[in-house]
Image 1 (cartoon, helix red, strand yellow):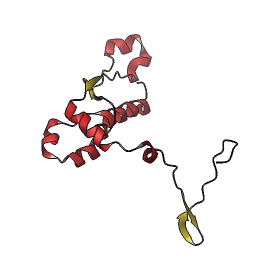
Image 2 (tube, helix red, strand yellow; image 1 turned 30 degrees about the vertical axis):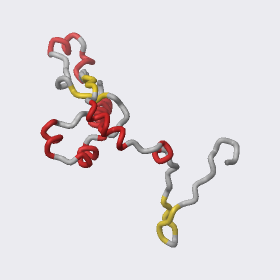
Image 3 (cartoon, one colour; image 1 turned 60 degrees about the vertical axis):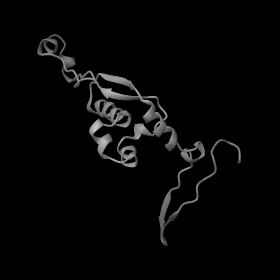
Image 4 (spheres, one colour; image 1 turned 90 degrees about the vertical axis):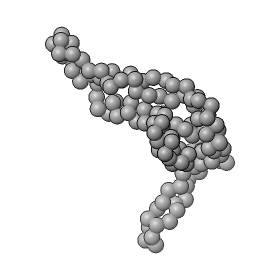
Length: 127
């Protein structure tokens, strides 16, 4: 990465796909673990972990290539889920109909907040 927003995206990806720490697995309930570690409920067969702290250029590299000073190399490792983790993911998966609901918007008018009417789909044909 070269910019902070890029590094933030890598960190967010890592947080969303990391495995729980063993000490937390022993001390927290399965429900709380799923809240803290969304990757447990994901249908993916792997976790991601940070292999080492981000690598930054050396002073010698910056002297040769000035633009490299803001660069960082993030090394992530794919770790396959154990069967116990896969069981947890399968039991918490929602049906597709529940995952892809059309969002409702709230409209605040003169009579207070209420649900707004959603327009029809804009695909050129009526449903």
